[in-house]
Image (cartoon, rainbow over all chains, first blue to last red):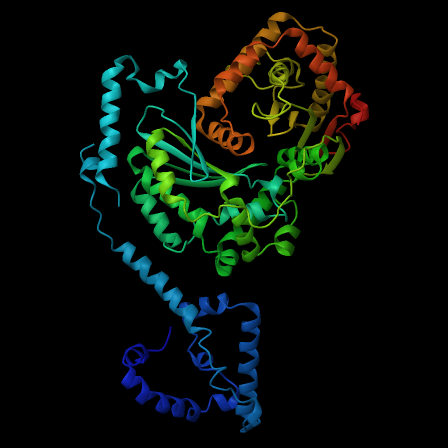
Length: 129
Length: 459
């Protein structure tokens, strides 16, 4: 499941976007995951069907990189140290590689729900037959 | 979803034609009158054919020149077949399924050696919806990698498993491979997992689809649709398909050559033997020989009449009633294969195979009565005309004829050709079979099943 977010609301309003952007950048760096070499999408809780399915749909190289990042971060977290500064995740590298897939899956599920709740009206021509 | 006018016009026209020809009101009884004829046409480079069969349903097919014969890499045809009716740019898989369910339609996709067929059966009024769907499937299917791994690959794997479990299929595939090598000889299902684990992925299938659904390579054929309607909707909905095949794919386009040979495959499930000879191409092709169809039904094997072995020579001569024998004249656009399939207990298969060869020799020597040949002619003609009525065969043959030779398959003419076959032609056809190299493939208990040389055939 993608985390709840006000991002789309903010991005739609340029003045708000301009105001929030430095704040968001500061928060992203202060959250600490970048110093462990993680991306924001690595932190999504994966204990549900949607995310599990999304993880299965990752291309093989991205799935491998994800596992590598997680293990490296875990190792450093246990040792109570950070990565050397040149290995930190840069804001450019911090891409939503998983959320995009999750959103697609959620859209599929929503469509299924919609179609389940469909109310059918027969065309008058067929109904009379 | 549909404009009301089209629906109404169809109904009006149906009513009008009934008023004019009251004798034809019982649509199903009338086809003796030559309504087999397909009308063909072209709209913006897309070839289409239709025939207005009386009745409330329509069968629409998109026949593409993308059968296993034309695939540049193994497994592509199967991949493309299983990607049919999956998510397109405008609709998801689920929506396509639900919408056609609501219309009471039936969607299928299958492939033969030469063709890939997308088919829909539906109520007559829904024609525009399905022509649009076909246009969409051909032009804008999304070939997503996860759909390939989650949905397409398992289906290909099932087909592979099913193939391995059926000795008859294995024998027929092996006979084709022996007879035609590459091209027509390519198996229609994967014989091992290599093709789809080594060569196949979603991207390659997408590339192949650009070739398969390019305007010169497919035809839209409808049964039970009005020609003008079809013409109008095809004109409207096939704008997005590529007008030229992008990549130069020459796989399978060479003139097929007959080789022949023998193959034996051990199998512990049951026994099957296929004895094959070069046959006749389709009526629209170059080497059309109607006498092969007559010879096929003369050898026969399967009875058309209940509780009787039938008139066919093999039907009467097979070793035990439990042995299944069937002679097929498989026709392709530029070649054909006349093959007898024998399945059953190993001993009776072996014995029946010997009998089959003896019978061909007997026909070649002229030791067959005129009466039997005329029965065979009648049976072959019936089968051909029934093919015409059987929508599925007609659709494929017509589509294939359209894009390979630019003429529709006219069943009436084929039936006439069969009528004009003489006894001598049948006998000389049998003689020429024995002179060429035969194709023999045996699957099953190889200890019992005979070699071709033991049957008296040269391979």
